[in-house]
Length: 127
Image (cartoon, rainbow, N blue to C red; front, side, top):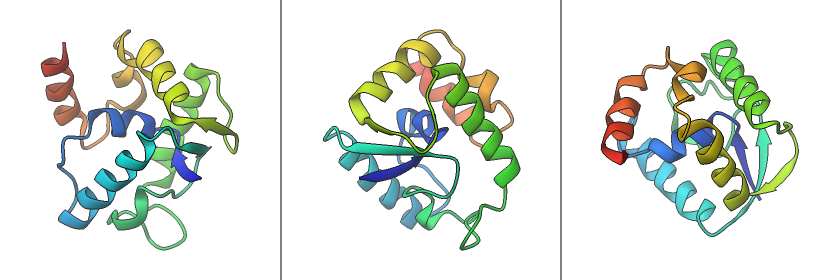
């Protein structure tokens, strides 16, 4: 079972093989591939399987922990989900697309993220 930060529901949807490094992008691609197999997922508000090669990962916590934990909490609240619960990927991905992406709510969660402009470009192409 994969462990995924709640806000990474947004990141996985907009990922276009650009990231902090080649290792990060490769890991993200591998995690997304596993998720698409309708993997069981435990939503968390801490370092997860995607964070493995992130430069913000300081070993036992995220350098931007306060900011990204806020993103996690917003996602959980909007989707009415709980952290440390297990879900099927297809169910929570559909929920994320229906409630956040289709209603253009992603920026209310993470507009101050360093990847926001890239996400906006990806979303504009998807429309």
